[in-house]
Each structure stands twice: as structure tokens, then as C-alpha cells.
Length: 271
Image (cartoon, rainbow, N blue to C red; front, side, top):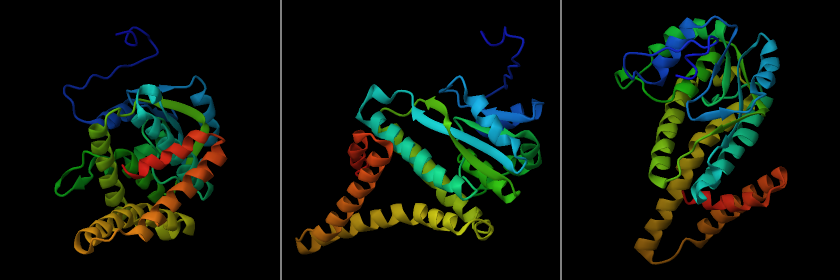
């Protein structure tokens, strides 16, 4: 109601909850500006986000640019603190490295600016995505990013454009969210395989690591449990290897971020 009274805003009320994708498309088709800023409803932007993102979009080859995400409710619980660190790594390691090689592989919905002319050419493909014979109702951000890259646009990351978003503060909702994201990662990696040869080789390595890493970790854990059950011996070598890799990664991040709290991110390995 507050925004509806402001003449600068045009509120679109759809007749029913049709999901994020169709809501996005309805708004984009009513838009007129050169740029479209997508913000999730549980996200608060820093006051300078638009000023930070727009210069990156001056390059006509850039189709989308995302900002850095933080956990708005970081201090709620031990889990929200871990998720805040997870977001830092996802943005300042993964996305930053991908942007260095010309293609952020998933521009996250809480804070991403799109070139409207690029969106307009992709909306029909975006709207008509099916999964297992039904209209897709997950993985919107990653799929739209893949479509941008397939159309020949670059995607960028702007670390100084800060957006604070609400994250799950209980394990059950968090695991369900992670399952949705994992499904999206695996599905859209298959859709984007033909795209990878046109991108920098680092991105192929990164995508392979994102998909195989969790599977190999799960396989290691299951193999270790099987060894314990069948032989009564503990898989110490595998356990020490996982611990060592975790501590090395967290130590490097703590050094880069100059924050000792990242040593505690090792607890996320169990999740």
C-alpha cells in the first residue's frame, strides 16, 4: 500500500500465485527501462547498489550483473552464521573467479541487473522450459543465466553492490532449499554442456568440480560407512583427507577475508 501511493511505482497484482518465473515475465513485459533490476522480496539493498551495477552494464556485451549477497539475519543462529560464510565463498570465490574468465554461471535472484533488450529476446525460451514433462518451477536464476550465455552475452559479478537477504534459520528448510538448488545445478549443467566449449577452459573445470565434488564426498562417506559396517575398521585415511581439505580451504578463506570466523566454516562440511 505504501509503494502503491508513490507515483514512481507501478504495482502488478496477478490474479493468483503463479510462481516466480511468470511473475518476473509479467513485470519484464510491462517494463520500459534499458535495465531491469531483480530483487527478491526478502532482500534489502544497500543504497548505492544501482550506482554500482549500472557502470558494469555500460558494456553492451554484458547481459547481466549480480551483486554480493550477505545473510540479513546472520546473528539468528549458528546455521545462519554458517550460511553467511557460505554466501561469502559463493560470491567472492566462485562468482568472482567465474567473472574473471567472462561468465558467472548463475546470477543470483536477490540482486541481479539484466539488460532488458537481452531479456526480451529470451523470454519465450525462459517461459517455455519443461522438466520431466511439466513446466519447470525451480532453478529460474541459473536457467536464465545459461540462456544469457548461450545468446552470447557476458555475465558479471560486482562485489561492492551489497544485498542482504533472509536465509533459513532451521536445518529442515535449509536442506530443502539446498536440494532445490542442487537439482537446478545438475539439470542446467546438462542443458549447458554444449555451451562450455565456447567458454574459457577454467569454467569447464569449475562446472565439473561443482557437480562431481558433492557426489565424490557422498561416495566417500558411504564407502567409509560400509567399511566400518563390514570390517569393523574405521576409514582413517579418507577421514583425515576430508578434514585436511576442509581445514586448508577454510584457512585460505580466513586469510583472504582477514576474518578468523571462516575457520568455523569447517562445520559446514557435515551439512
